[in-house]
Length: 93
Image (cartoon, rainbow, N blue to C red; front, top):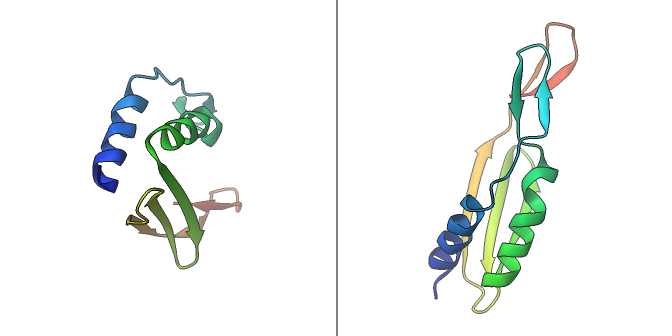
């Protein structure tokens, strides 16, 4: 099975988990996922299908997902932009 097929299998299983959003933005009145809401499930699913995710931060945030059987990988990256909130506190966009 390729790294892409394993990643898709993990994604499909994660979508069946019925995860709940535990974060709440009181200013905007909306809920959001925190890492603790989904990372335990992602780690279990990755282990079950033979994947390992490594995150690195620099000018960009990068997630490299490795196939633990053959070492192949797929890379996801996004630029990191920092700003300040209206109250002068740093935030990540």
